[in-house]
Image 1 (cartoon, rainbow, N blue to C red):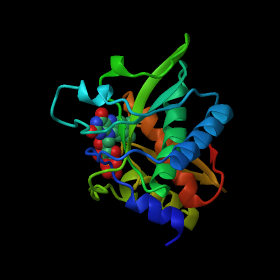
Image 2 (image 1 turned 90 degrees about the horizontal axis):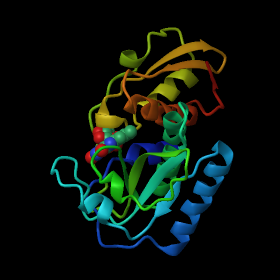
Image 3 (image 1 turned 120 degrees about the horizontal axis):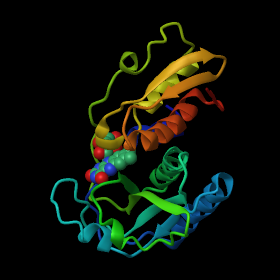
Length: 221
Ligand SMILES: Cc1cc2nc3c(=O)[nH]c(=O)nc-3n(C[C@H](O)[C@H](O)[C@H](O)COP(=O)(O)O)c2cc1C
């Protein structure tokens, strides 16, 4: 198993955190990657530290993020491409966090949106946030769909199957895994989202995982 595969397999959503600050060198590494992503994709992603209100002010019990003091605000120009873009780059940051020994959870619903401290410029939008810190545990493996559930392409090369294998290990909203992949040709793939607002974010996330699995820059059709 290579290092990336290990990280992807070890990553699980974590919803309860310890009172342990993220060390400065790790904060710097995360900010460096965030800066690169913002530049490359014209985004305004921000790491917000020592702010508990977004999670503590959320009142419902189900899906509540406990004792988390940090989050990544996924912000960018408010256009139709934004959800997929933040999915792709957000997951890149999630896997970097995993590499740094941190835990994460994508959060689109169970937080107090109005308490988010990020800068959101005119014509920008906050899509969702990612909780980040040291978890009480490293989370648990959840159930998953199979390769056959997410593709009809039977005659496909190994890189395609490996791409799907990694995509199935990616986080999706409510673990719905509504995406589908279609094999088109040499590193050409069609990725189809399910219907619904979260599915565009999910699509960006699973495309990033797919590329890591295929180990090639995919031409997305
Ligand atoms: C776009 C998106 C939004 C999510 N929103 C929430 C949320 O509001 N609250 C929560 O507790 N978990 C949320 N999750 C986490 C998913 O429930 C979790 O990723 C999924 O159950 C799969 O589990 P895993 O991440 O451990 O693989 C979200 C995940 C994604 C990708």
